[in-house]
Image: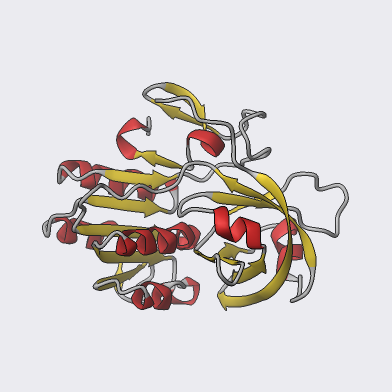
Length: 264
């Protein structure tokens, strides 16, 4: 695995344009940050400073779903799971802070790819929307599987359809929407169609299972791994991932990895 180049991450001022609930415990955030919007690439991440508690020194790392360089905006979805994200969810349009980004290594669409499968679990939908957009821009046909615990927690379906995804399938653990069960129940049959790549993000057991299915179908698979990226540029060693090449930082070598290189 090649040594990463110095991080392109920089501190950017941002103002909130939109911060609204879109599912149970899930918010959609759009910020105005022109330099970041022009620089960030699908699969990379950002780290937000959330005002309101001077004891919380660690930024909140988030993937992004879309960026509009012309409008100077970046949009992300995030789960409200702790004090930091609860304070984040309370911020209103016009509120300001700073964001560190873009960070990390993003998605890669194989040259000449004709068909790509994207697979999301839970809030893993965020970088998967960006992955689908990148694949469509490369001229590939894109199918998608989106899973959640229950229908109330599903989001991002409309965004995937708007991007032109051909077949968008839904699974829920409790069967309240789509197929009852895990995303693997839909991924397995779809792989028979033949894909040039599978791109996935979600809970780690889910990604491990999807990666195994892709390997069985002899299809290349990339995974976006979630870690606590404390510093965001490779200095603190808190986001390590075990790979066949040894321990590496997700903030510099990832968050997107070739699934074959990850020691699951």
